[in-house]
Length: 189
Image 1 (cartoon, rainbow, N blue to C red):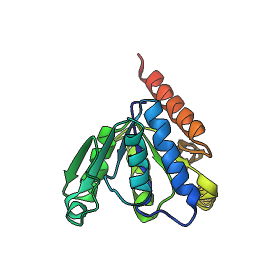
Image 2: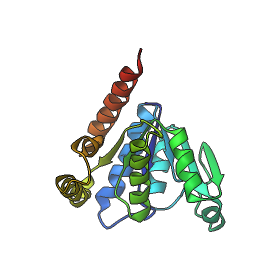
Image 3: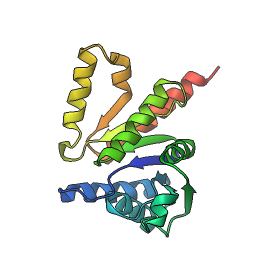
Image 4: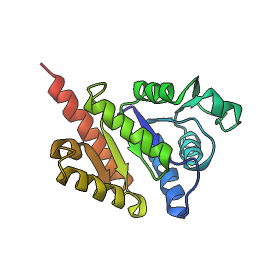
């Protein structure tokens, strides 16, 4: 894995553990020479993970809509900042730039990005893996709901199994690497 898209909150959240894990993830990515692809903001967990990657000598690629740049929330110290016109373009560009996706705690923007990446995978637009980094049980309610949707017949067990869940940084990076390797092995003729 050379580039990892990180979806996360533009706020810090109520639990200091969220920022601690965002910082540690950024440092771990830089140590493993994994570049960050993210929403391009300087605020909240987004800013924390970007600053951690950059502070540890890594590369950070942001993708931000012009409207958010106009509100002065863009991170100005990135390796590269892509300014696009819409949220749809943002998600498409992030998908183009990354090898995999991970979601940290966040709100509706994080949910939207995660579910769109999953939907695009289901439709065959990409074959990149995606995961939840379950900080302090943040994703427990969502994973329980996804299990309910599967039991109710609205999602196949195979589709449900695509969403990787990990409780540590090392675990999530290992699971994403393994999923990338498995996808590449399937593509060998």
